[in-house]
Image 1 (cartoon, rainbow, N blue to C red):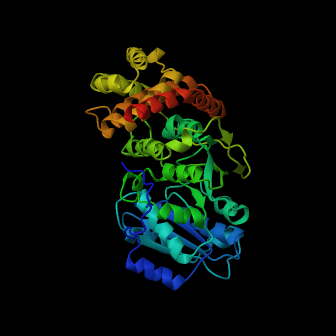
Image 2 (cartoon, one colour):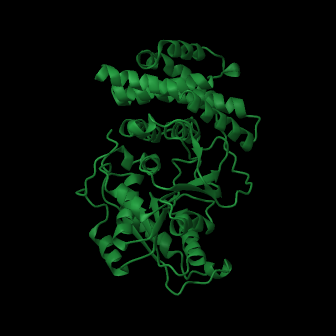
Image 3 (spheres, helix red, strand yellow):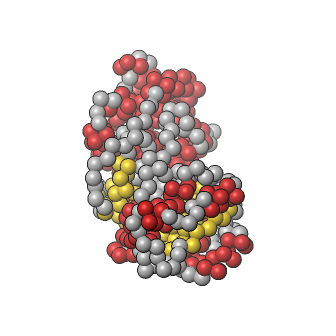
Length: 438
C-alpha cells in the first residue's frame, strides 16, 4: 500500500457538480464542519444540532457551513436534516440564533468508498470556500456537545495550530487498536504523546488542508480506515503546530475488539507501517518523547462500560497459532518467536503476553512489512499479527480487570514508556535491513 509522499493535484474530485454549485452559491465561509457519514440517520441529527449550536454560541461573527459527506443513502441523511425543523433547540439551549444562518447540506461523495474519501470531499469544499478553520466530527457520536466546536476550532483560529487532536475520556477497553498500537507507536516513533492519534474528531488549518489534498493517497486504503492516523502522522512529521482538546467522554457505537475487528485493523496498521517507510528519516532521528498541549477543562467522567470477552480472544490466538507459525518464524527473531509459542500453551486462567514480548513482536512485524521476506505479501504479515494483537488485548484485559479507567490508563502509559525504551531494538532491526539492501 502506498503511503503517498508524492503530490498530485490531478486527482479526481470527490465533490459532484451539484455540490460544487451549492458551494458556489454559498460563496465563502470562515469555518467548515465536516461530518463523514454512512447511513447514520439515527444519530447524525444530534451531531448536526451540536455543531450548529456550537458555531452560534462560540463563533457568532463567523460564517459557518456544516457539510455531511455521505457514503450511503444521501436521501435518508437529507431527511434527518429536514427533521431539524424550525430550530427550536436554540431557545432550549439558551443560545441566540446568529444573524447569518449556518448553511447545512448533504452531498454524496464520489470515489473509493470509505471515510477517507468522505473527508477528502470536505477538504475540497473547505478549499472552495476559502475557510479559515475546519473540523471533522464522527456521525455516530452520542456524547457530543456544542463545546466540542469551540475546542476543535478555537486553537486553529486563536492560537494558530495546524492540527487539533481529540482527547477523550474513554472506557479502559474502548479503542484497543489505539491503546495497544497507534498511541504507543506514535509516542515512540515520532516522539509526540498524542493520546488519540486515530480519533475521528479533529480540527485543521487551511495549510494542513492544502497539504493533505496535495498528497497522492486517495485511491489507497488510507481512503478507507487509515485516514485518521495518516493525518496525525503527516501533521507531526511535516512540523505543523499540533495540540489536543479535552472533549470529555466519547460515547459512540461500541465494538468488542475480539468479535468485530473488521478491515479497520488491516487498514490502520498497514497505514502505520507504510508511514514508517515514508517518514523513516524522521523517526530514526527521534530520541525520547514530549507531551502535547491539551486545551479544555479536564473534568472527570464515567465512560460507558464496555464488556470484552477475553477468553474469546485467547481462543482465537491459540487456534490461529498453527496457521500463523510459519509466518511468525520468518517475521520474528528466533528468541521472540520461541517465547510467543510458549504463550500459546498458557491456560486461560493464567494467560499473559509480557509487554516486552509484545513490543518486540510488533517491531519485528513492522520491519518485516518493510523488507517483505521472500514469498510473503504484506497482507500475510498483517494477518499473522492479528492473533498476537488478540493475545495482547486479552492480556491487558486480564491485567486491568480490577482497575478503574484511570488506573488502567496508567498501565497504558507505562506500556508506552516501554515502547520508547525498546526503540533501539527497532532501529537496529530496521537499519540492518537497510544495510542489507545497499
